Length: 201
Image (cartoon, rainbow, N blue to C red; front, side, top):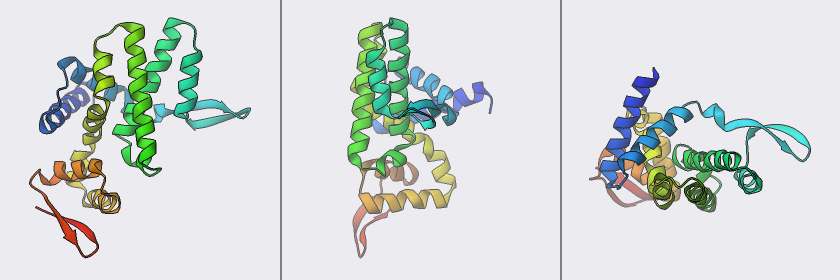
């Protein structure tokens, strides 16, 4: 998929998601999400080399490490880059990779969300850009919109959709329920079943 086609696909999905959920994302916010996701379409950018206990390691750099490194940066440009990387990686993880983070508990979801929102707040203070306070304040909404990019595949892959259903049955997490509603429609009905809650539409 060419970048122009990818951009059109992302813009359409972002518009549909924000409208369906009733999120008040500004036009600048929706444009930023499109640009951000074009850059993160290759998720391997999350993996890089870093030092851990004196050894070179390649992988997903811990958010805590990135936070302290951003705090230690002295130059304005370097601190801005460090904070934006931290903010966007948190948004991508809590949005597109929600299940990966959620498997370590809701506390990890909240931790990543809080760190991401704080990093966007720091960017706002450093740069004065009006967009970043919006993302900081509506971080959860932005992450839901990013997560909704899974909907096209869930609508066309019963196996993947069943995994989301199973995760919802296991956790009753609203984020999984939002994906289910995105696939089946908002008129789904949840009721008690023999093995917990079930969904009908």
